[in-house]
Image 1 (cartoon, rainbow, N blue to C red):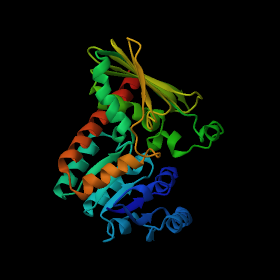
Image 2 (spheres, rainbow, N blue to C red):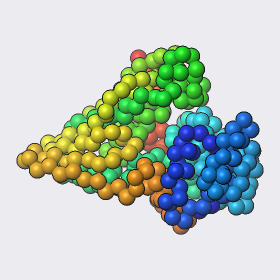
Image 3 (cartoon, rainbow, N blue to C red):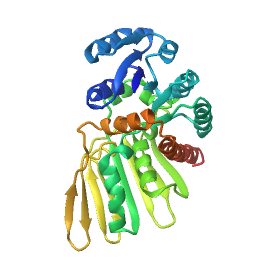
Length: 323
């Protein structure tokens, strides 16, 4: 894979620290806004990225790029992804994919017409620990209660309180805790248990944005409570509770560093199957395999999963307006 990166924000810095560990991945270009050119130039020098562009169109039409990683503010995803697909590039789009299900379907149709692949970059469903939990769920089933928690006091929250609004807290840029943190919980819950029958979101609102919130997903035989906060501090713990036992893990639902299976008969075991220390390495390892082999079937599975998540997000937002 010859990867071009659009964006130079925090997630790009984070990704580049682990990119060298991903086999068959070549960093060929990076583009950003003119005001962030110095940041992109520094990143290119530090990580051996060959080209630096001040124009996304130039990157999308670079013959040395076959895949574009879109890592810009949420509200810009659709526009940048569409340009990349139209230029015949595969696309890895940071979560959340785009703003609406309709946009997602439009981009998928365009990708199919151009014979390219598009995937959403979401860490947890690519982690070996997630895949192991999916297998272990059957051992403690039937499941009745799911409680997933991604609380992380935001490094930008204090500035937000002072009136300095970063994109992640900007409603005009599709920010907020639902879209930034609870989306990990949604991906995890949908991946394990499928689409719920009912969705209800209870946000804590400050300055017209949800700084924290609780999302309730209702299934015929179980209830899921998805908690996320950017305005609070704790060490989060998540539980999947069944009649025969419990699976739980501490920390971010985007990382799942390890997990414990606690059986009703007293047999407890702790597991860690993750191959990499960095949470983004597994997803990009998968993306390289999917795109380099043009595995349309696997890409379609991921797309269907992403669209289900987007439908839940839409229902969550709608439920707030109906309260």
